Length: 201
Image (cartoon, one colour):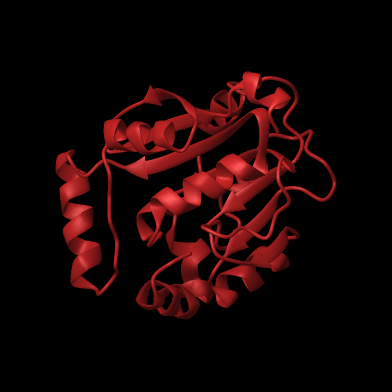
């Protein structure tokens, strides 16, 4: 899921991560999940680390959800401490059955994925028709985004940031219908699996 250097960084940072990082925005996530057709009960938090995004998801999900999927054992231990299901895995080969979830969230993590296209293609497999992937990322064309990108490179991370429009293109190539609810230093892109795919799955 993450490059080897990124995984080692997050393993070391895990005990302090929740103390230094702000929480995810519950309103933004709730609005983005509303793009789904039908109820959203089963959610995976991909690259979810300590469960920061999972903690911001709306009430009403299944008892076993959300489940955090991440490559860092240290971060997953924190997610388990917070009461979330936690599975170590690769975003491009998710340990999830096809059509098994209503939604996936990726918050402040996509830029760490070595294979973004592969991850989005596998998410398309795992999300039911009408379900969504909600991605919150930093825009490298924004002045603060450029600073962040340089900073992560300076500390040895293998980060690759993409603009909202470039992310829409990658999502569309993976088979998603896309929308951009908000733009800025941190932006949101939602990809929905078309309802019409239900007959072919």
